[in-house]
Image (cartoon, rainbow, N blue to C red; front, side, top):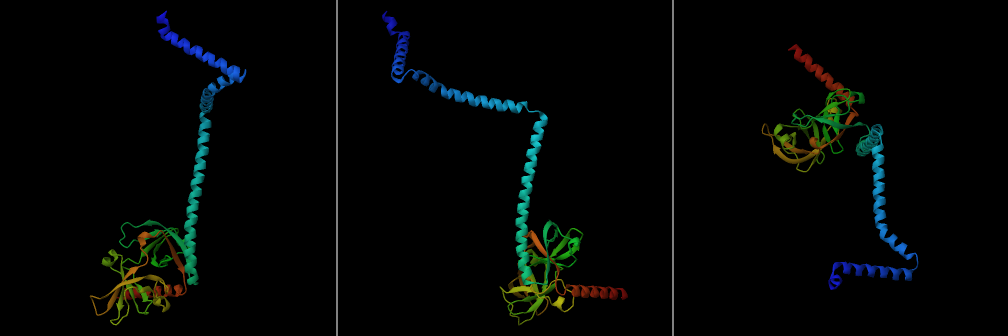
Length: 304
């Protein structure tokens, strides 16, 4: 008998009796519905778990029961939505780009009423070009012709050297063939813009044929003079287009003249958009003069 009272069975019986007594006491105190409430409270977490599991199973079953055609149609619809959103995003960035171009366009147009401007985007760069030549997305169908000046709001970039209906090649002012009249805005001294490979490698150009007593100095702004255009000698650039600033004045190794090293305002490799001046005051006359000079040179060469 003593062994029974010391056994685990006896201890378990005591626990059960204690729980029954507590349950009876709670029921008599809280009312007849208390036992049901207590059991419901204990079962509530399990019911939630079972409900969630049942809902997920139903959703999974619904997906599984969809046919292959329905799934393909749904996927196609989602892909169309993605494509639409991507197009809207592209349009948004295009609008931002155009807005910036129009701001620059209006700024230049207000300063030069006679300019006919056309915005263009660089679509290709020549990897073999030391001077950084590139191709733009506008051509002859947009009114672009050979020798049209190419600029940004910062200054001169170059000129149109080749034209096709829907695109055009731009040769930059870093090319060794670049040569046009320039002027110092501080003292109005004029010279000839030129270039060579050594300077181009340093990102510099030069203003040649300065007189010995010139007052051109570092920091001066250099712009196009437009003299060749205005005097009927041909020429690509109208007057007043910003070119760059003087970085140093040096003696020419070939004669007694001086030349100024110029740091251009525009670095061709860093720009994405440009503006083409398709027309300006004096362009037609300059083009006619250049054509006449070219014809005269050809006839002179033939006669020799």
